[in-house]
Image (cartoon, rainbow over all chains, first blue to last red):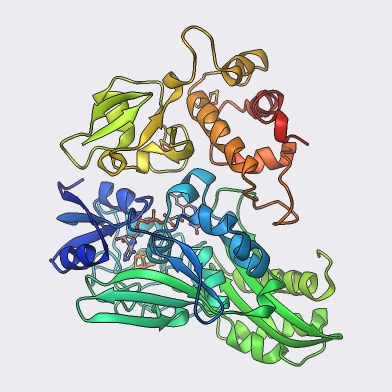
Length: 329
Length: 168
Ligand SMILES: Cc1cc2nc3c(=O)[nH]c(=O)nc-3n(C[C@H](O)[C@H](O)[C@H](O)COP(=O)(O)OP(=O)(O)OC[C@H]3O[C@@H](n4cnc5c(N)ncnc54)[C@H](O)[C@@H]3O)c2cc1C
Ligand code: SF4
Ligand code: FES
Ligand code: FES
């Protein structure tokens, strides 16, 4: 690890003041940043600890929930209102990492965790445009089982690894940020970027911008929602493919729904095409598969991940059949 | 700046790079806590901070200034083993023993989570009272790997002691 100064932010204003310097990193639970610093993927000169800033889960003015950025992943998953009103969010968090890591990880850090592409971590041995822009991408023709099939670029085929973010994408969450340029809000879908020709930038945040909170809008249909994750072992592994979905039924017709996929793209993938195909449609296994096919029509599989569109299709069909019939498939 | 480790106040390291794990093992010579992967993937370094289980390898020691840390060395009462330590011996909850300190600290944190109602990935009903079945313990302990495959004994030891109250 390269030497760095550690400072505890005393309050938000202090964090922003300190964050205006160059080559800083905000520190949440450290479960990703410490690893990145140890591997010298990240070498900040100063680490500003924002994990002890007041962080609560409160009713928002709009009737939803306001979640402070320093709230721990476990605290969010176990919160009574989240379990009852946004079960897909509890389930997505509980499907991720291990209990120890969820106890440490903050909401802000989870959003900004970096890809698990192994070449990205291999500073000595691999070319990676995300870590060293212009150096190349060893994943494109290398081991790319966990990589993207949608929205990737010549420069980078990495996926965003978060489970929690897949639920937040489906729930139309709002991200509150504050930085040198003032405070602003972003629809969740606009926080993370597709790689394009600048894969070193995971998000649209400017240097020194601090995530202060994530807001969940009131979304009654989310009470009937879930998250399903497919991975190489039953627990403690990143997703190959995951689905967050919420459904509101009107008889056997789907009145409204939300779908997002994880493990398929550089960002949590909100499935707007699949949603459009199913909104107002009669629920059936064929309709679910057709909707997934529409979503993955432009998929561009790599050497090792050609299974993803079919796996995502089956996973979506299983989740929607569970949500529309009330029975697990 | 100081940490409270097993009830004793100890200074935080001057170098911010030092992990809580290295501080315990090399700074304080508390070598009970083990280093497996040093990257969050095995659970061998699990300790309790204010009663919550965390991974000390991914923790910067300076970040834990002022917090109460319990390691495997802090569990016994003099020569009297913690009931879970005794149960690990009784149920053959280990072979080489390398993962054991992490397993024991993790299990104590796991039971506290279950008692306050934290659901798990496999809980069918997120809002129901938590009962620790074998499968629930398996899922909740999945952050602690055991290369010797002592999992059945580990689960028996946990079920027979700390998890008995919330058992199923
Ligand atoms: C072995 C292992 C397995 C894992 N498995 C999974 C999994 O299956 N699913 C999953 O979803 N995740 C998984 N994770 C990742 C884990 O969820 C993340 O590491 C965690 O959520 C990051 O949160 P943190 O608070 O520790 O972030 P940190 O490591 O502290 O920070 C991460 C990044 O966010 C920045 N940051 C932190 N807070 C803020 C803020 N408020 N404003 C602006 N920037 C900020 C930091 O500067 C840093 O760049 C796993 C991790 C490990 C080590
Ligand atoms: S996929 Fe992206 S992160 Fe992985 S090696 Fe290529 S450029 Fe780097
Ligand atoms: S040594 Fe910390 S998880 Fe492996
Ligand atoms: S007893 Fe050997 S690793 Fe668990």
